Structures are given as structure tokens and as C-alpha cells.
Length: 173
Image (cartoon, rainbow, N blue to C red; front, top):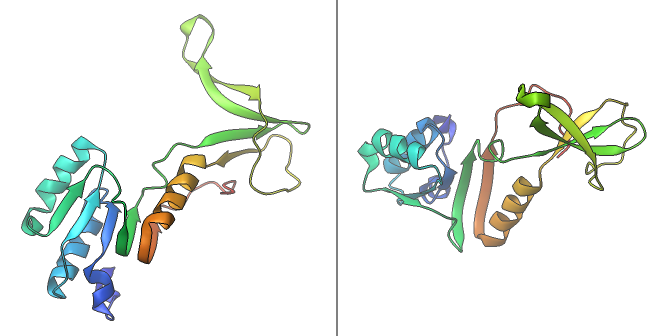
């Protein structure tokens, strides 16, 4: 909870959430910034439907919250990403004991639903390990590219990413 953040308030004052999610974190952050005399916040969200909900929920902070359709070229302050990385697509890799395959979804025979399909790939997990045959894991090239871009644009500050814990123990990136 942001209530536990006591000092220094100037770090919170210039915070810039990357995505507000369902708004409760952005709403609490905006209230905290207002109590501390902080500057307006910037929200970057590409989802039109979600933005409409955010605008409604954050109405009490209407003059202090600004939306953008893309990341600013430079960032200063605290960047908070709420469920941003979890929302980005992943690529599945499957180890059959002899080779790695990229796993995807195809239309099942006669259009009777969907099923997994593996194809040969040169992609690998980011770690070398003795994988058990049958292992399926994820790689996250888009999330990695996003974090690199954010790091390049963050001139002064810090970034926090709040992600729901995965129920799977096979995420390597």
C-alpha cells in the first residue's frame, strides 16, 4: 500500500504509472501525490475501453492525471507498471528431450477446435540447464524490449513493475 510510503515524498510526486490497470493502484497513487503536493501524473494506456473506465474512476483527479498513447521520449520520476509485463505476449518453448520446439496453437482437424502444435526453432530459454523432457517454458522478447526501451528513456528515476505471481514454476525470463 502507498500509505506505507512515508519519505521522501518528492519521489512519489513525479510518479508516472505506465498502465493503471483497473485503476485502484492509480487512484491510490493519485490521492497520495495530492496529499504530498505532488505534480500531475501521466498514464500510458493503449486500451480504449480500459482508459474509459480509468477516466471515470479517476475523475476526482481529473486535472492532475494525463493520458498518453505512447511512452514519452524522456521520463523522470517513479514509473509504476501494473500488470504491464504479464499482459505482453510470450513465446512457448517445448523440450522433447532431444530438441527445442516453438509451441503454438492450430485449428484441429476438420475445424473441431484448437490444439497445440510444435515446430522446430532456434529459440532457446535464457538459461542453460538440464531440462526434463516434456518441459514447456516461456520466453518474453516483447517484455524484454519494453524494459530496454523504458530504461533508455528513464533519465532520472526508478521503475517498479507489479505483476501477479505466476502459478507456474517454469518461467525463466
